[in-house]
Image (tube, rainbow over the protein chains, first blue to last red):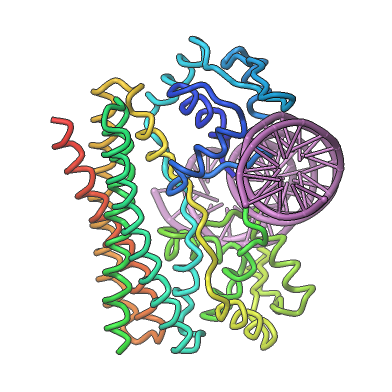
Length: 178
Length: 178
DNA sequence: TTAGTCATGTAAATCGTTACATGATTGG
DNA sequence: CCAATCATGTAACGATTTACATGACTAA
């Protein structure tokens, strides 16, 4: 559990790029920052209400036909709030890696199971790296004019390098196990 | 939040190496798996009680003078339970990286603040890599005979490679920003 | 004597996921 | 007509941290 939820900041950040509905926020999160962040509707909708009460976002009714739809806009105070958070140095990440936890106790695993876990990690890392590369290419093509492009690429680049490191690690580990 | 807590498995895993008290479990976690896992007393003590009720660990009174102390031993059923969990393929990790979240919104940051964040990441990654190397050397020296050695080194090796990847990423990013 | 460490525990508060509930629209 | 998608929300449950409470032993 984080001492304070980051959900409001994710919302403010995304709304600073473009006004959106809660549903669209969820879709955007899943599409563009899912490699390092996730949110559920159960967090998003209540957070949007709180942000509205605090005057950090403004709600606008924008129904599609008879289908209700609320588009949220960031307010100047909201933008200020976002910038204040961005200026704070990020605290120490909370680390919880279940795969490493299992490997740490690898002595109690069947050698074949252990190798399978590593092969799975290797394959996943390879796929992840390919995904990052594809996403980077896609961004460069489709968002060539976006002023945020370099920042978005930055996050993908760490994902790519991490995935490659993980793949090399799994490969080396499998070799080491014979 | 994880659907089901991993705390009991961490406990079983560590107790499979050596019987320990709750306090020692916490110290061991902080010392040897802190680079990929953490637990708090608020989780550990209740979990130890539950595990005792389930017969997966056995409690033994081992006071130090007038200071109460409970040493927990893993039972055969506990070991079975641990092995069953280890055989399950690890699920997809939940990803939440606050630093990347901030960088994603880097357009709203002062360029100097952004660079400072990256330099801090670079320094942290360098220190982390050095720490991993030191820990690996330490393990190789002090736990040379431990049958778990190669598994422990495995987790440190991923930490080392990831730290290096991060350092290279931060360096490249700083160059890219001019 | 006092700070630090060893040692065990609980309560409050919050965070976050999952499941559920509801209803309109669109495309096959 | 039916499934998928768009759209908004709540309730229940479990996970986790933080703060608090208590007390003994140890070394400066």
